Amino acid sequence: MSKQPEMTDRGVRQERAILVGVITPSDEKSYEPPLTELRRLAETAGANVIEMVTQKRARIVPATYVGKGKALEIAEFAKAFDADVVIVNHDLTPAQARNLEKLVECRIVDRSELILDIFATNARTRQARIQVEVAQLEYTRPRLRRMWTHLSRIEGGIGLRGPGETQIEVDKRIVARRLRDLKSQLQVVERRRRQHVAAREDYFSVGLVGYTNAGKSTLMKALTGEDVKVEDKLFSTLDTKTREWVLPGNKRVFLSDTVGFLRDLPHHLVASFQATLAEARHADLLLHVVDASHPDLELHVSAVRRTLEDVDALESPRILVFNKSDRLDDLIAVRHVAGDHPHWIVVSARTGEGLPDLAAMVAAQIDRRMVDVIVTADAGDGAIQARLARTGRIMARDYEDGRVRIEVRLPRLEASRLRGEARSDEGLAVELAGETR
Image (cartoon, rainbow, N blue to C red; front, side):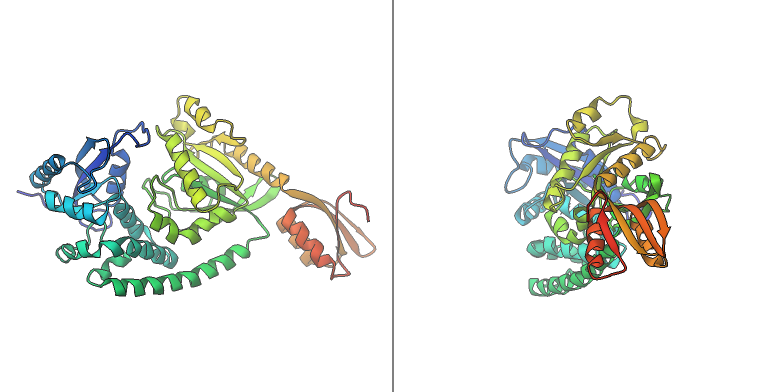
């Protein structure tokens, strides 16, 4: 007799799931037990994991993912435990999914489908919802035939929720049209986002990047004091959040929290979230947040580096921030992973340990990218004085004969911009400190 289905905190039926993974010699060495990360993903999606099955093979079976004998074993588990879904720890081809589904006689969801489902559930803003739907449709387009065979019998299970669920019975032509419309809408949203980013050009920008659940949102809340949603769940942050962070010396920077990264993040998802990930590419400095207590921190660092490379942000200046120091017994693993990276620090966003030193490191990075400038203007020009106070650090200010001479440390871009404006404004003079006229 099957149990009454439980409900998740989102009011969604909690499906009974069996997790399946093939372990091959080419898989990256992980110190966590097999399928641990997949379990966290499944539970984040609202599943009740009732069994985990692994198979060691020289390679994945092209037709059925696992061997036929293992597939039949999974089928027995599915029947015995009254499973709703089998979740696979790799991406499946449409043929693999179709064949495995026939053998197991249970709905099959692969890793990308699971991640897309989590993104669909967590999407809050219009931009995030559009990006997720684009990724869902790009993923499902080649799999529509298989989905049509069973979707009409299922109510919004894992992999079927979110903006794309109304497209169940559409054909490929309508899906293609929908994709064109969504991408057009996304371009409009992205233009607006670029305008918001451009409006912050006068400020030094810092981006938080890292593996999902590394503690980026907790760190942002600790650094800025702002109310930021913090959850111990994978991908709880999808939309970029930007807050002001006041550094030593009253330096003000914009700190942005971005979507978390993951090993084997679906390429459709990376492509559709280009606008969000662009925050990392355009930031003046990246804080790469690492869960220092995780046994696979080295794999996590590598996964983030690969994603940064995918979005052309690998060359951006970075500080490795090893978070959750309050859970560490020693720094052996941290020092190994940090290697010869020139800038790294160990902190705890929860206890505050190391945060003043992190702020000082960021302030020092800003100083390296600033120049000392002497600005002379009319003493009554409050706008230019407010601008200099907002964008730089005023070192000295002297008034004489209705004029004000200000020694200020500015970002190179702002100094260059001011020098350009001075050429067409007789009341404004800008020179680099030590520069002879």
